Length: 271
Image (cartoon, rainbow, N blue to C red; front, side, top):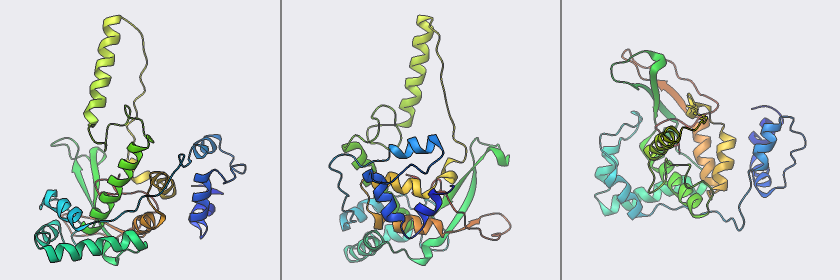
């Protein structure tokens, strides 16, 4: 990120500047990059925008953990999914856990144990262990992952209800849509072009390490537009920006690093 955006959206006035941009009141005259100016000019609240009241009920909590696999990976320094899955069987413990889940969403606070994040490299293709051909995923704390997934589902539902994303061009992370549908449409278009003997061009972009390149302030603006409140995003992105990353190896854990951007692939924050 370059000036003047860095100062405007990472300082104490970040909230007011973000809301001013979405309301159409933020001045873009000082931006020299035409592409950035064009992008930000489209970052607007839709008509009659109102934020969503995000709450995790006890039934939400029980439903989430009843469907979440016990052996699904999570950051190893905290409680793992099996603990929460077992605790959800008790009405009293499930009620208390749901209350704790609502504290970060309502206040912007996050517990210090959410700041640990473990990186793993997995094979994209079976048997190919070249580092450049592997995919790095991040394991978050189980509680943080549950809150992020709840926020992500609410944001996507809001976007669908208000037609903020294209119904036919965004096949991932939507109900009644699958990513493979887009691949099928591509194949059918090519078959049709071949049968009709017509020329055509196709642009395909596989964004390498895209989850690691997400600028937090851009993601915040997009999710504010999708109905989430500032406090929900404050908890999520303050946690991500201060998270300590470690890499799991066969020889122990090397020194940690704290990246300045990115939302973590496979962590539940990659909405």
